[in-house]
Image (cartoon, rainbow, N blue to C red; front, side, top):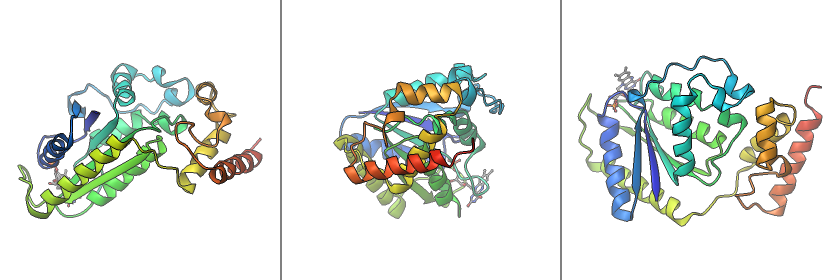
Length: 251
Ligand SMILES: Cc1cc2nc3c(=O)[nH]c(=O)nc-3n(C[C@H](O)[C@H](O)[C@H](O)COP(=O)(O)O)c2cc1C
């Protein structure tokens, strides 16, 4: 399996010590090819907030030459691991800047067959908030299943995983590997179904880039991504939600 790692930490320290354990454990489970991207090494300015990605298309982002090769690596991977140290009870600026550049995926979700693992470490508090926040973002982008590993580690740098932290890291790594390996795609929750159909309705009148994407993918004709099998009841609920949202949209 091909696993893309997006490292959103400014240094290879505590969080990376957990990533090393996760990588090792996944490789104990079977064959994994890791592709690593260190965000700090990219020449990525802050998101300019121009909205060109939403309005004209992701290739029109002023920083597309940096972001699009990474977006392509997302498409090529079976699964993605993303890391962020916990800073000021939140994610690193590096990681947030990357997420902002990928925001067009809210309008044009795509990673419906992929699974992700979010890893963060903190000295005391905040890692759970960080991993939950990134999990939410990845679910909006379409990811089928998002695993999380938020850990408290008592070290300012150079942490060596042991005890409960080591056990938990190995356990989550095994679960993540098995989940990617078995290729099972989970049916969306009602919340996910609602978001999909809200965007389906919004994008009928969205930007040219959004409308075209929903037509090209045929998502506009479906109550969820056709890659994910859903039952008759969920299909019907999705279509009803779509009609209600469409009817209530401002003219
Ligand atoms: C700028 C900065 C902000 C931090 N903010 C918090 C915080 O809000 N809560 C906390 O418990 N630890 C905080 N820490 C400690 C880190 O979360 C902790 O050391 C973490 O393991 C660092 O991961 P890293 O070594 O992979 O960067 C902060 C550290 C730094 C450098």
